[in-house]
Length: 307
Ligand SMILES: [Zn+2]
Ligand SMILES: [Zn+2]
Figure (tube, rainbow, N blue to C red):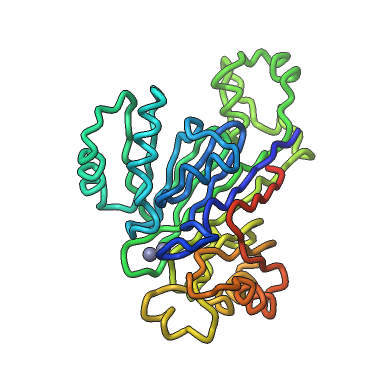
């Protein structure tokens, strides 16, 4: 049985909102949990518009501390408090910024009834939740910025519970060890994963990369290779490449060439400069180099199955 991964573009603008576009952020809903990537102003209304729950957000991932990526954080936390949240909340953020964010949160003078865990990330960061892994890619921007890779863990095969029980393996940690590819010892006998796992059922979990803000990277990080979905900022088109270079943002042509090099399946462009009234100019430019390019619109939903 496969589950759906739902990705909502809560906003697609850069720097300032426009009449039709909110600032960039992404909400991923998977197995009943909401994962929020960046938290700009007005993020709460956008979450309501896609009928997702604020309280189901257990993990927030901040790419960097430019206002258009985190000015909505305090408001969101305040609403969680008003809703009497009790469950812990993790906020992942670039290395070295915990102190500032602690002060920023403290400035609200709210006494929170839930624990807020600030977790700093760097390039080596890797965090495994139930059956997903989140890792980081260092980006090329004017402040320390990390993109995030959301990867559903691969299934090495189908675990044969009946067979495991017949081999006198007790249910529990031994089962997980075998499922994770480790051998175990029962009495004086070793049992190997191949004894209880049918490798014909191997499944590769989907991979979603969220890379913003950045001047397009020269080299494709191995983690990004073959992503099912690449969401990449494309603030500009080639005509404004100079501006992109100055501000360390990307142009559609470079991003689409990057997507091609990375051999991703689909590219979604976001974080579009408010200067473009018709955002399709971004898509048009990208499609010339990588056919599966799409410009994201606010409240767009992309749905894929996890395996
Ligand atoms: Zn930005
Ligand atoms: Zn920025």
